[in-house]
Length: 120
Image (tube, rainbow, N blue to C red; front, side, top):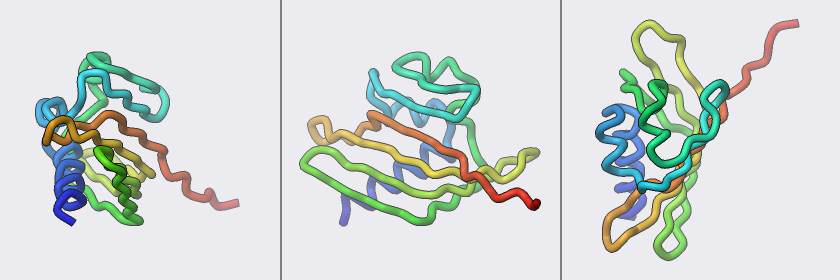
């Protein structure tokens, strides 16, 4: 259970503490997939994109799923995130972490915005 708790805490820091914090928890060749217009980013591209790892005022994870196979941990969840001046952001997300000699590093992250039904 400690591994699962550790990875969920890291994931929350990713959302709440900004790019500098996220960079220390991310593998050098990591791949992130964000909604349009950002798209697919890898390695140093991740940190050049001003929309990546911005601080959020609050985040709530629901529909949480966790799996661990040997040195890989995978989180899947629905996020509801809020920051000042923006509407609440809701997405389905996955993050994959690799245990590299006792240090967990994010190797991938993906976000798919939740589409809400539009009234007819």
